[in-house]
Picture 1 (tube, rainbow, N blue to C red):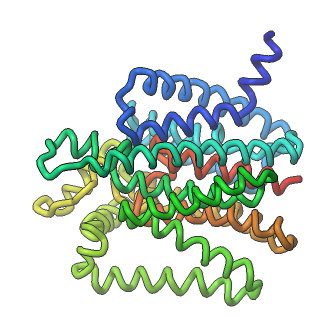
Picture 2 (tube, rainbow, N blue to C red; picture 1 turned 90 degrees about the vertical axis):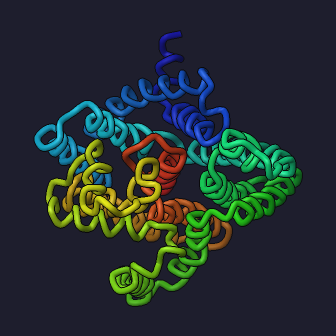
Length: 400
């Protein structure tokens, strides 16, 4: 009995499933249910325990470059927290990062390839089915909306159905779209193929109906990844990363005052954050003080969404909270991870290559989403759980 429990407990597949669906419930009208809060607390305790177990296993077999970079990031941010902005809130934030980067994310070199593929398929199927059901119910509720709704009904009833915010619906639908494509490619039974094909259409409709701009970035990752993998020329690959990045930075620097409509006020957040970064470039300000300190840069300027969504850009969030060195190490983690995945895909052909391109589009797409959001780290979010789960499983798959 004890061995069975330990085997279940140490298998991060079950933990990731629990954590993923607990956080998915947070973006629905079920978020205040007692059972959801209990599930999140169980996930937290399980995640901390699993993190230390994974760290022990990694150190025992020697960490690779990705794991080493993660350890450096966690050690650096812990030291910054303890020395420069030590308090309970900032320590809790660090623990969340610990769970995401060592509990949820784990490169499993022991589990057979067939089991890893099976785990990915099951998780993807369940996510797709969850979104299929919730969107259909939401669509029904959406048709019942009226122009005389109360504020409570607008937030928690019938405007976006079961989803609290349209952006949450859009991003979760975008994820389900890609996962449904993956399941369609991997399914062997025709009935399953037909269902996942239907769901790709439904989830794509959900993305555009909800008008969540962040989800469009997730979809744009698909052509980006396919082009990047298709053309192996190093100059081309470097160019399609550097040129758009430079264009966006220069565009914002030159025209940030005129981008209000497109960015929904994010330009004000980013400019205020930049003023704060210049004063705290190396150590940051921590999580708890971030909102207050960003406001203090321009007291009379409205900063929409900062309380709930923070800086709406993960790169600015990182450098503002934990300084420039933390940002550099985080980018190194992404670089090592994506380089390894792309190098593996370069050796594949046919259906295997197609399946891996879809998975790569998902993890790259979630990074793209975080150019407009701040939820890859620092908080409990279905986006963060999905990203670190699939990145870990994808890298595990390519270890075989």
